[in-house]
Image (cartoon, rainbow, N blue to C red; front, side):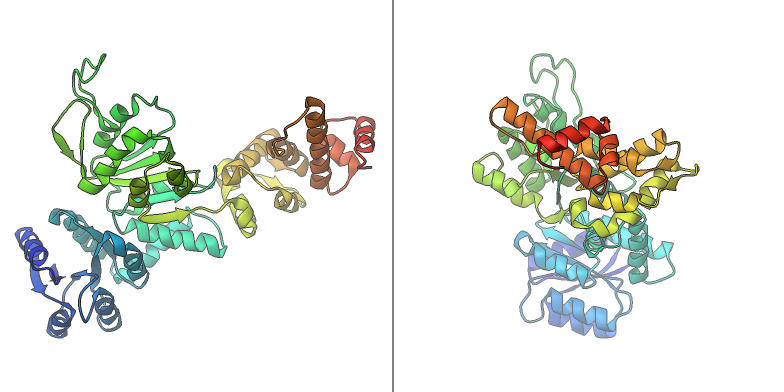
Length: 442
């Protein structure tokens, strides 16, 4: 492969050219965008590795020229941490990926190899390959709404670089699925994907669980132990509920991100971290930084690429295709049927548990109905799962308020049909009618 390295910082430019040349790449250097354009007029390069910030013609200008005039030259952007939003914009405009400075020169080689492998695997252009990836992602991240299309596009972009990702969103919105998909389409896909639920470890053990420990590091450490970061070497580590990492241990995670090394508990020897980090949270981390429960510097280092996954109530248009997709997985080869009024009923529910709640409701209804999914089967699950607002005050008042809300919800799900609403709650109609009268709902 022929590589053009463009950087106005001489030391980085020369050292990167030396590393790539030693790795067997035919490598040429340019000191700025203008010199790069002159070289591109007379010579074809497979990949241009360019700094984003340069005088006169910057990386964005160089990218625009390449995409408009050269058929299949891939562009890798080098950028400082503060310019990441611009680098993401560059990817949207056709750059293959970006890499943040400072970085070890060797870390760019897997990106070059991925470009080479993608081209060998496809007779089309790099753009064709990206479109193929998007088609694969579409079969995993299901939905027709604009917000889901944007999520799919961001996942595809995330798969083409190694930047840290922060996934936010309510329970059940698909954060685990997104993390796994990013790993599966990245150049790290043949290496481990290690999920760590940070809320499951006792606070005094989480450092050892993440980074391992040396023999004798603490009482009971009779043998050295590998941590999750050791297991994830070469691949991806997914820190679910990252906000549950205690404040005193967050600094060590920050060090891994910034220095690309970590130390086992009780050992002064650093271990190189060849790992992509994806973190997720249900909380508003920025608010947690203001409260002092989460380090602000760690927040910004995790929040390089951010995907906020929408609750299901924000994209109800996707319900029909989601139901079809989920039932295909649930039923497998078995037959199933949906009653005519099921979809209208599903649209009335707020789905506080999001797609996960929808999947569980469909699965239970499929099993209890022997494949025949009806409103009656779904409604009982929906009413019980839909939490009433938290009430405070005298016990009798709280009970009365909760009872009223259950009655109102049953009527809503039954479309105002009192007999059907009574059945949903498992009440005799006479009891249901008396309760409606007591609450003035008759």
